[in-house]
Length: 340
Image 1 (cartoon, one colour):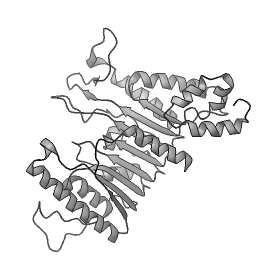
Image 2 (cartoon, one colour; image 1 turned 120 degrees about the vertical axis):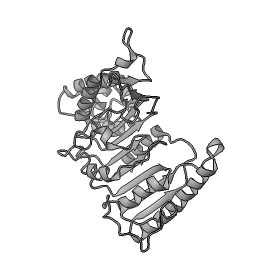
Image 3 (cartoon, one colour; image 1 turned 90 degrees about the vertical axis):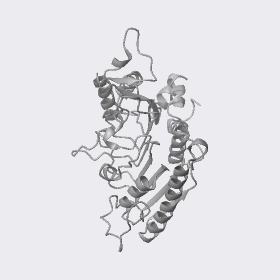
Image 4 (cartoon, one colour; image 1 turned 45 degrees about the horizontal axis):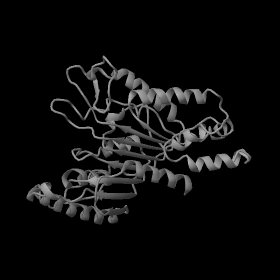
């Protein structure tokens, strides 16, 4: 392999480094020649757990690699960030990472200091934002615990503090409210060139926040929403975003004629892909749950019909059969983006 021209090696490494960093790390340990040849594409895809220690270690490593010179500077094109279960204590306003073991002698309620965590996030985003082509945020298991506040768990992690000029695709799983990532910021349009946005709300998350997303990514043409659960929340927000009418008269007094619709909140969207949550089964299949699911299916049917009238290409996939696998989803997107 070391006898191959550098240009050929780099093309091979570009196709190989699509697994979040494992292959790039292995190549860097092979030999000095291979390490140098793989340097540009070693971090082509990057998968990180957004805890303080991994963030600081990677920032130090990446800074060292970049300090070697602009020629063949490693560029991160696809980023996968995972936030593990986390909540905040109202009394101390300190971050609690339930999935981590704090150092000896450090109380869990004080680990890690929030400002150090946010500073690390700011540094990371500043490093990756110029070259990033896709971003994939997976919020894994943020919940409300007794008197702890779960919905503020990202604490302004600064994903949306910077502009990503090259970014084309953004996916947010488990936390779809952009204010948790640093929006609004009147001086920054985070995703000015993005054309694809994929949102996967958690079971308890009723808002899709599409109006805010239209300011963060004003050129999105392809919108995908997975895990749609409620007609009066999710479907209604989609209808308002697209500027179409869906009849919810079964929960309100009917109006004749239908009231005029406000302007579309997300007027650039021309393609919509929707996948609903699985139907209620077992203990969750109460009469109320079944009625709500039937209303959801009726509202989705109306939405699909109205999308055709509005010249929006709408595709409604079969309901989820189980939990979404974020890592498989991300690798599939990255691999297609490299090879297609």
